[in-house]
Length: 498
Image 1: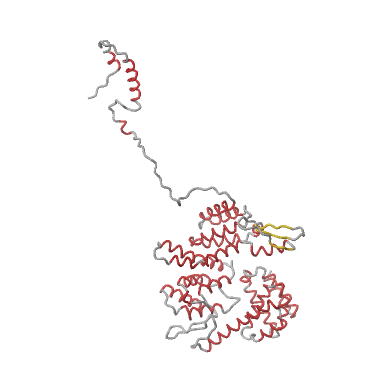
Image 2 (image 1 turned 120 degrees about the vertical axis):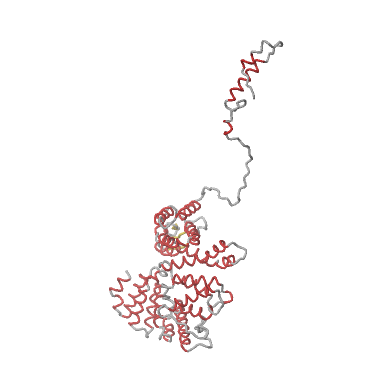
């Protein structure tokens, strides 16, 4: 057992020691200090209550920093600020709060007057729709909200006047050189032009189409054997999500039907080499068709849907596909056949009869009905060429003579295309009035029916020709004066266009 001696006990021996120790006082002082420290850090105490105190360990800091690790950054430019703001807001969007967050985003982008915002916004939205498939309808509403911000779009350009009092304009941008565009006589002319090309709709559609044109790159990567399934899925979503979003935009009357046909023709590889057609192309076509099939009407080229059907039956379905793709093609054929006025497939020993090819060459086993359809397709293509030639030379006499040859079954299609071109080229509308006058085979009832069909499709046509209603009013007024058709300027027609 350890004994602890007090200073008094030790000092009691001082008189006994024969040899005087001079340093005994120093020892006592040092000992007293040790006793005081013992209450803080035990040296002599036999208690074990201090064993619960945490023991200090010394260690070396050893940390490996990942090269791709996230590090907070402070935006330095306006473009970086708006990109960060857009990302933060889009990442928070849910089905419950999207209305509030859309308005928040609108307020934020209103603070910027740079054209760069359009490109940043379109890229961020495109990246979101690829993986946030469930929120695509929300992003469509967001796009529609931004497209309607006419005043904000006008602030994205700057108008300048030169010494000759001519007007020029340039984009407010840091990404492109600010070259001047012009000259213009009035600010109204500038606004009419920039409203068509300097807007979020054009930039977004351009971004989506560029993504679509890169489809082969994503298909090659997705078909690699040594990649993870999650990565393979992401590559495929880069194709399918873009087409789904475009289909929804069309279904909501936000884009033109022409865009859908451009994509479908490319996916089906019509008039192309069928050896290069990929399974992903057919799947993409079927995905897009499933979204738009109830609305698609083909007002400009009425035979185009039949071309898709005939191409699929004649060229696509005979190819040996995976079961899943074959099922998709069967679904397309079934839904198409249920549309009013659609071609019907005829069954034979091979389940399908070859119908009209897109290149309009009649196969050896074609019957008389197929020959008639083929002739109609040829005739309409010739009508298109004649009318488009007229847009350049304005030779109404020669054009009227050429059109008369095809004025039988194709008369309605011919008139629809003529009216569409007249409304589109309203500055040259007098030439079209003259052409109608030279076409003696066109009767008053034909003109009235033509206008009626055009008005029924006006909502679709406005997507291609924003001023379609105003232009149509101008044109039918000229037609009414030329042909003395008072019913063209009736109150019902005027009200439907105002």
